[in-house]
Image (cartoon, rainbow over all chains, first blue to last red; front, side, top):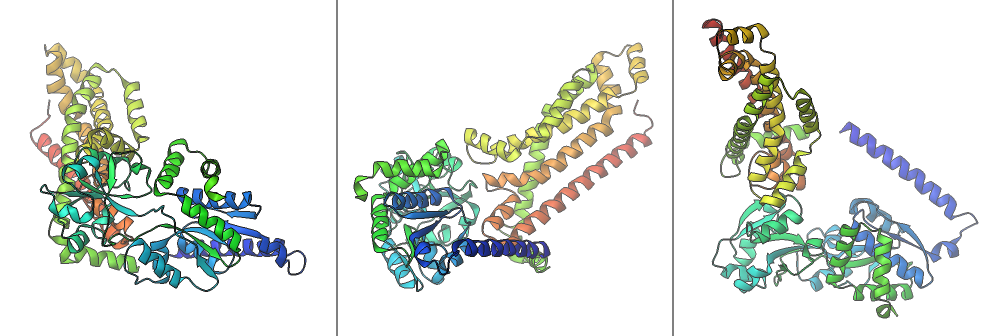
Length: 304
Length: 224
């Protein structure tokens, strides 16, 4: 405990110094408002997929003539959200459900639209969320295409009619979370056994599905595991999984033209696009900037 | 301090002492995996170590094997084997067998090869075959060292068998993984404490067996 307090202290002191330095350099002549307001600060989580989206925002705005400062890989929500609320970051790729839970801890899962509407209402003054994208990065129940076709399963509810026993595979914490076997029983009346696979929906989970060692698995919708045709994500009519669509969180400093441009980016980015971006990142290990500019080049028409 | 108290409370909570996720079940699975691994590793490693020790060949090989094995990431092996043979307990058992073999080979080799030269020469002079020399002279003399090899393999395997839970619903590692991911640190710490206690018990048990063996052999006189 003592060590962690000390580390926190050092981190706080270091960031304090960084902030002071930032103030000093950003404010050389009087107020400097005009110069500062023209530079848009874009942040990202310390998560490769989020960084690619942030890089796409950055390059799209740069191409439109804006000055951009990149403040990427800030860490997790607890670390960067105060920075956004304090107005030090102007644009940040976020996810609807998890962001809503920060401001409305008691919010219940619902459809993507319900979650987005609740989020729009919950955003504090000085901030706003732009349009949500079709691209999402959330837990989903996944079966193999063969399984889906054999038992005519397209939604989670259809699992109740499957005549063979179903085993759910996923990270062990999933066993006791609301989306685990108990929640599945309560919401959809589906009985499943559970087996842990601790690779977060990675290759081991995919192999277990394809080998029929598990019939159902929890995999992120944007995971590279979802590339290809072997796996199908089940629809979730009751909004059982917390919807987590990509949504830009912006400060009021972002002008309407910039916001409109980012809305076009969100509209152009499909769910399959995000999977493809993540897959490319994992497979080629190319930097986010390279992947982002390739995507923008392919969607130049959508952003006009 | 608070965390330690919560861990103790977790450990004594009767809820955690029954059912398929209860401590007795997980302990039994952990011990089962460990004993399976030691048995398989013993069947493989004993003949190799004995042959190397008897012929006094392969000292360089042993050194490379033992040192190299220290650098093997067992969790990486589990992932690799699970991608090949699927999830379940087989992949972790194979990875743990690979972890256990070097200690047993090394213990057996050094025990057999350091058996008293005079005793070995005397046995040959009496007309013992190579096999008889190994089983009647070298092996009994080497028993304490072989036991030491098994003891260190046992300790490694008990402590590392937690990774079986990476791909199978088995062992004390379930508490550690589940606690880590859901930030239930008392559960995670409880899993670690149970593993440590089991490792200490296993070591003490192995040492006890060793003492018993020495007493029996001494009482019956020289094992020769």
